[in-house]
Length: 439
Image 1 (cartoon, rainbow, N blue to C red):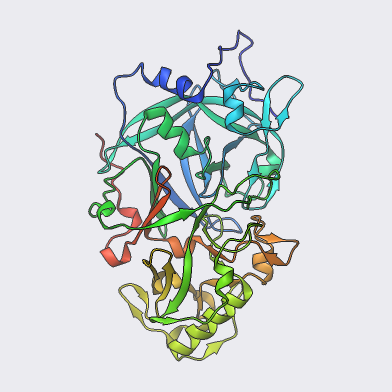
Image 2: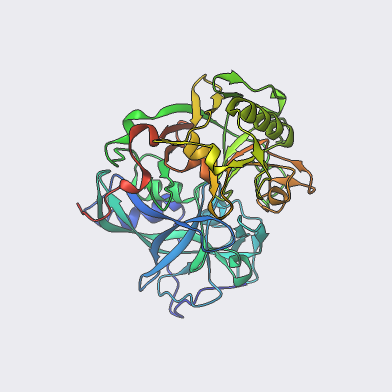
């Protein structure tokens, strides 16, 4: 058990609900932001590609680097080494704060506990739940503004064991999933703005908004979003969960896949979520590339190669379909290849253009279809609660981070819908938000 250092003076009295606790302190300030903003950085220094952000936490405030997990349910940070704060407080068992985590654990010290999970490696441990001050930048959607603080932001204490495998300098994971204690839910509760967030992964830098638009990059991209419903998987897809828990990840309804406007022949029953939680399509930021169930991968790959009309070359792991770089020309929206279109349940289409469908392996003079077969060793070793028993994939399609780059995604948790748009089509990119100006 790893507990932050807390002054020996009397503990603060815990209020009876998260909303009251946060709102009480926030109400003492005259400025109430309409939205918040965090920078996103693409980290390629570790063995896996990760997208990271920074917040300030503790008293005195310290910058904390975190890996972003779109489908993660919680915020956890390593408390084992160097966590010192005069404002850190344990969450007591049977408290309303503890109930927000649906916790099944209580320590001998009457401290509520939960399992922090490294969704990059799949490792879970046990940690105490605490609260502490968190400080982030506000925004009017056009540029970043003053820093604002949440005094009792809830998190789980992790350890060196669970931190292993995260990017260099990263101390924990910021979960954005569908729980009452994820980043979006805690921030919206603290400042009473809409429970929405928008994420834009860049090829190097990106941006994460909490709250409604505008989302100004070159222009207000919230005006061009296309919407589709978000679905709920009735069975948890997390590496560690209890029986009966629903998934907190974001699923969408893919009805079919088209390549250059022609339907790919595949087993469409795999596209629906069954009563046991198998099947369907989810969106992930911890999977670097889209992973397809084996039969879907083969059907998509075969149709793509046939439509492209170019000979394949020896593939480079983790990919299974590759071409000589010189055989593929370039365009403004990336490699000039057929579009891969996901036809969604309300008949809107998510176009995956060349910039998102292809990955260049420069030292091999090879360019590959950036999708991975779920039966490959890479997919089986991804350790994200995806492969069950080492063979059968629980989720048929996992849309990975490369396919998300330079796409703005808005998650509206109140109405359960996803807004999306490729910024390549808008002559824009995710690195264009103005972090240098202030309100």
